[in-house]
Image (cartoon, helix red, strand yellow):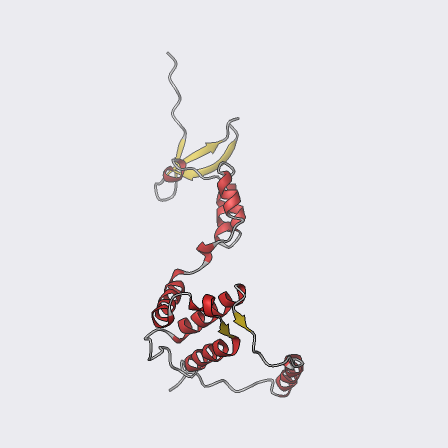
Length: 198
């Protein structure tokens, strides 16, 4: 009976066992550690996985799983960070307890009311107050809740658009002035910030 030949091995500089990986035809593909050899991932696969980790989701689709190919082209809720989502859920729970869950879908909302509420929370945060004293929630989470209710009402045709009549945008004109100021003051003074305060 013919004995099977031992698999050729080498050792790295630290004594780690290394294996040569070959394809079905016996052609050399890669040199990998013992651990990687027993769960081998090719260089091409590792490149695809690295690209996927950097945002190229479709690059990591497994050809053997058609559901993966379909799933990566649908809304990716796994892209939403859970921390802010949990804060939003608590902010929405507060509103549900005060006004009734999904009241905005039944009663409707005014754009001006939610614009004002959102700006108040953002302004409070910007002026140094992180937590809303009434709810104990972050002002940014409360602003998120305002925008969520507002947008949901818009989607469902329950938003009363009481914005003022449209006026010409001045932002482009102001941007030109800012560029002029930047040329006039090429070395502006450093801002005073909460982080940099004495």
